Image (cartoon, rainbow, N blue to C red):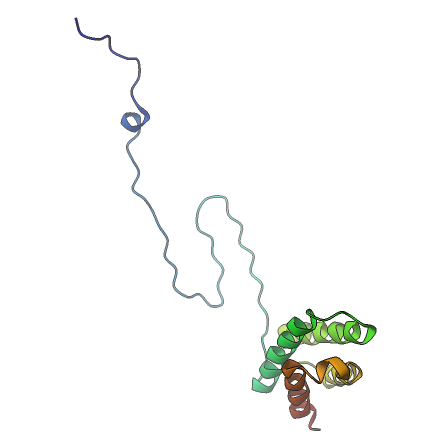
Length: 135
């Protein structure tokens, strides 16, 4: 006597296998996209630095912020960090930091000189400010 047939079949026999799908993306600039079901795309566009001097300042400011994070904060470094954040925001939204903003950053940098004067990133910010402010 042969064994009784089983009810149903295995899951592999019920559904044909779908081929594996993959997505390959090279580089994308100025675009937003989503892959797959139920995705949401949010695109943030920033103006970016207006010129190389502003771009150099932006890089130096970001490095100085990272370096300052390793120090114990003081009133002077907190004020400096707030000015650094303002400069980054202004460059990223409008393309350039205004002269008044740069002057405030220079004052904050000078006030925090005992910390920033020893950092290569602090020196780089000071040099970028001199280039932009002409002094």
